[in-house]
Length: 631
Image (cartoon, rainbow, N blue to C red; front, top):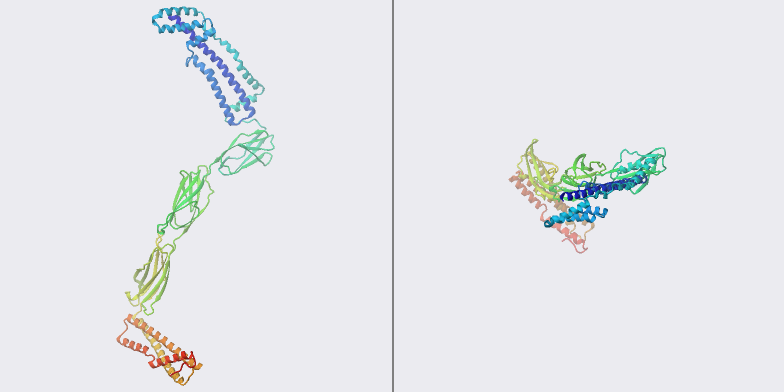
């Protein structure tokens, strides 16, 4: 029984192999028919429609996809089953197919397989079941299961291959250009294959690379035997007519190009191959800001300036630029003709410098494609720290020759460090000493006034030495160091004993002359006043001449008083000078007392009283004719 059953299974397996061989043959015919039909349609379509590269690419890969699916489904799948490399029909499924062909064996074949399964599951009835299986196998042995499949039936399907193949061969004989050019254009799906034209489009531009934002003039020349009247250029969905220079030369200018362009010419019913205008990104500086860090001595807070360009800043200011760029790899920061290369990171670059003088700068963005030479020049104007100014007025003491008074003012743009009074002591042209005294001022104020007294009595100097003196002011320049300005240098020569004596003698002589003149004037006033008093005793009314004489007399009295005051002042001055120079003696002091007594008694009491009465008479006479009279 065992050998009979195995023989039955072998016959079924042989049927299964032939079943898949039949599928493989038929599937090959179907796959070939579909591929040939698609190929026929596609090369004809491509030849007559001249689709774009994108459309050809879509058609090409669609053709490949359909071909792979057809081959996979109709050829690869049954082939794998034929070689038992994939799932195949089960014995029961094969028996059912065989039974469909041999109606008289369908039930017996299935029963045999079922009995075998039952015998395997019921060992106690094994002998009886196996006897029944042997009887059925004996009845099935003469039947050739493989004859259920006729491989020759596939011949009737060859017509599906022959029809598209015949059409392809026919086209290849009658119009080989359609087959050749259509196939060539279809296979070269990523290239634009154009129909043969009686002329050629030739781009004359040496380079079709342009920087973003620039203009580009496309120059084109036609070559061949026949030329169309007009030529157009296609830019995507837009079409432009080229300017005609002559019968074969045309041009068109694209303005402000921002991105890559795929262009092609057409005219006379023919198109040129597409060509690409490549746009390189233009490096640009979008904006820049700056932080201004002022010198510390100015006491100004740092300042942020947006959209910075030209600058007006104090000397010594540190400027930190923040530069915002686009499409830039680096920047050239050109300051006073010196270039600093700055790396750009995340579209940002920074540059810092301390500005000490007027400058100009410009910024040139760069990338790997282009250096943007179109950059603006900016100016940096520096406000230099000015020298301080000083103005001094010198006033000598009205009495003492050894005291000098100074008043003055100082000014600066930012403030001061110090104000000093300095003097040098020279003897025979050589410097033998120098002194400096600080004067208190408000350093943070830009204007100050000051006063200073210089007492020469306190100086340790010798007769004949020369003093050079001046004021010196220093500003608070924290960049260049304090700048110093001086007042006019003046000199004072310490007099010798001979010069002192001569000057004192001169003063005494001058005083003596003034005193003599004053005494003469006093005597004359006394004489004239007495005479005028006698003349007016008997008069009841003053005449014009009388009034005039009284006025003249009173004027002389005033002159006398002024002269006396002047003599007193000069006398005090001479006395002080003598004391300062230790030139006064007991004899001189006695003479001085006599001079003082003379001043006090230059007019006797009687004359003074008479002059007072004359004054009263004048005043009363001016009031009325009967109100005044000398008694």
